[in-house]
Length: 168
Image 1 (cartoon, one colour):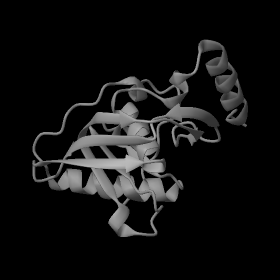
Image 2 (cartoon, helix red, strand yellow; image 1 turned 90 degrees about the vertical axis):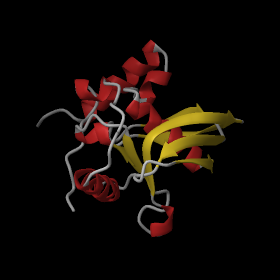
Image 3 (cartoon, rainbow, N blue to C red; image 1 turned 135 degrees about the horizontal axis):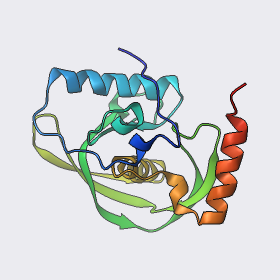
Image 4 (tube, rainbow, N blue to C red; image 1 turned 60 degrees about the horizontal axis):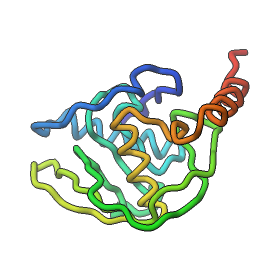
């Protein structure tokens, strides 16, 4: 197990569209373990491989934050297949530490995701899980949550972020 460094806003690797996963390997098993460990260490609900510099379509989600191993989800080549309703609430990102903004997301989301054995499954999530599905799939497509805001609001958020993270 290893906690990996997380890329932060402004790193061009966060803007890349991730490559699909083909054959599963022990290295990918280790990546998944590291993603869960890193997310837990940073007190995050989820983490996508691109956030640790790995350009692959893999993300992990644990809405229990390590309390219930049965809630750990591995998303491999995920696709959102259905969105329903709407929820408005705060959202943050481990790649933009210290910034939380209110954002509208679907209330219920269904995703299709591959299992390590190559078979496919559908998972449905509501509320926080739906938000996490959308957030992590966005990362796999090279999109950060702040990109949902208009240019003026995004600039205000960016200035606040830069002020908080000035080198000493």
